[in-house]
Length: 138
Image 1 (cartoon, rainbow, N blue to C red):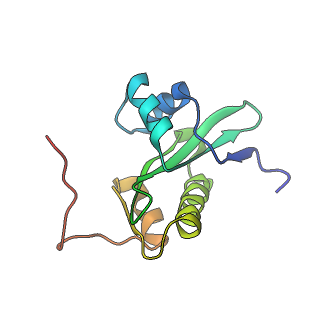
Image 2 (image 1 turned 180 degrees about the vertical axis):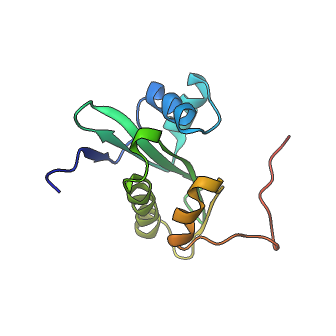
Image 3 (image 1 turned 120 degrees about the vertical axis):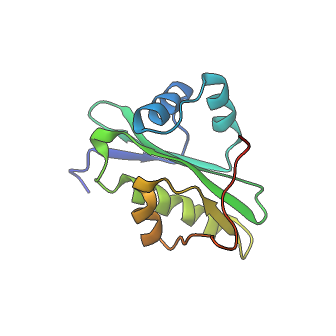
């Protein structure tokens, strides 16, 4: 689309942009050291830049073992750029990467915060409960 002000990149944003995208979009803040590990060790990463300002405005990544387990993480869009299809664009690319590069029958998971649930449901994700629930070390 010629009038599209967004540029899709099949790469991670900078570490500073990663930190800013997480905190400004409402995800839990992370340090530059944590961001460096996320950027360096992701199975796949993409982000979207706002062309007029050359600013990273959305991102998503996959962590996993490359064999059967893939976890979608860090789905984040800056508030001023939400509701423009960027999350769907990112999630579509991430799922296409799994479909293209992973062995058959991958297990794909994500943690679904309330604002993202409609998108995730529309793309085929279902709750895992009551068979399993997400847990974290407290």
